[in-house]
Length: 90
Image 1 (cartoon, rainbow, N blue to C red):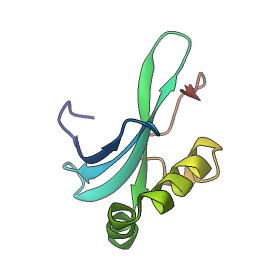
Image 2: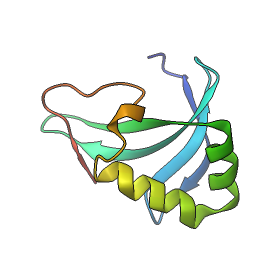
Image 3: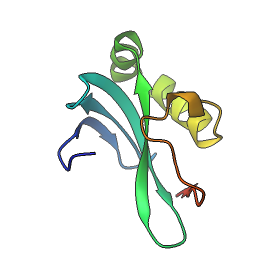
Image 4: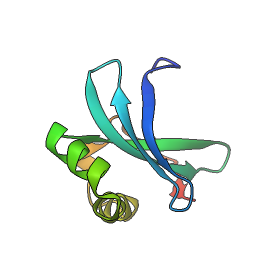
């Protein structure tokens, strides 16, 4: 992953998630911070263009999706698979 791969286009400070563009693959994502034992990082989940547009217009729908990702219900959409010491949402 390059340092500038992900560009946030929306950030919710209150609900701790962001939406944005994957500059490397040209797609879209939703992300949120997680904490592991030795490092904090963000988990990024692929979005379709339709989901991205919908979530940009409806932040409540975006939050619902992010909450389901926090419950690990969409792990198949993770852009980078976590290692053995996967973090927990903060």
